[in-house]
Length: 280
Image 1 (tube, rainbow, N blue to C red):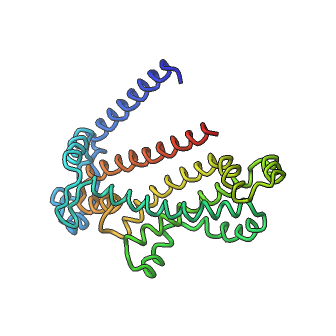
Image 2 (cartoon, one colour):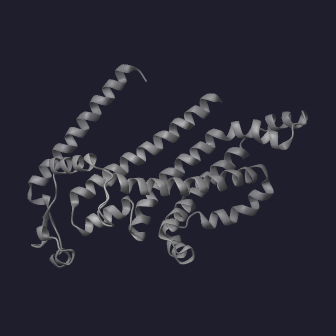
Image 3 (cartoon, rainbow, N blue to C red):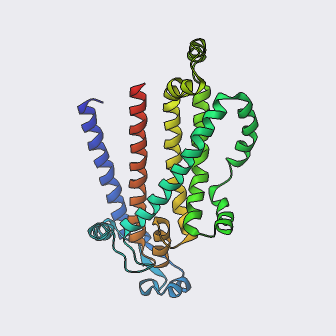
């Protein structure tokens, strides 16, 4: 991308940001900037500010101050319900990475076998088509019942939601390798394992990386909802706990960090995918 175009894009992004912040500030100054809260709920959670049935929606300045407070000490731990935002994000990222890596260890080799064998593809396809549309959170009750550990159950849910994009993309990438290349390897009597490693894997690598990129995005989406169910730690639990405290500013800060971490994970895998494609 030309340098001038990059500058124009950056300036336009700043203008859009300024417009959004201005609209947000204007909205919070109006009557619509006051959110109605059920007085019974406010009394239940013991929030004095909302006991009258209304709680003010925070403006950009309040959220910015709260954000700075989180950045000053992101890893504090003062008890089960009072942990720093950085610590909560670390719990979530560790669960996502554990489930994602376990899914990769299963999906990529299995996808290779399915992609290389039409018989295996036809045998596995009905199971994939039935299991793929199931919401990952639907597995949570079964995971909690069988595993009996909230943290491991969350990682299992991440595994379930991550495995399908990687499996399908790997099988597709392996199956789409040019037949001419395979015929040449067969003519030269290259062993099957060496063919898979030196011919099929490099050709299918970009498609596999695309599946991994899709999987990590879905995993980051799902972990927030899963942690709202299991409680204890994690950014999802943080959001739910702050809602119980009617701390809207903290919820907005958490939402911002969820988006930034999701973007960072996507950019890392996108960079890896470009490196793989460049080497090809």
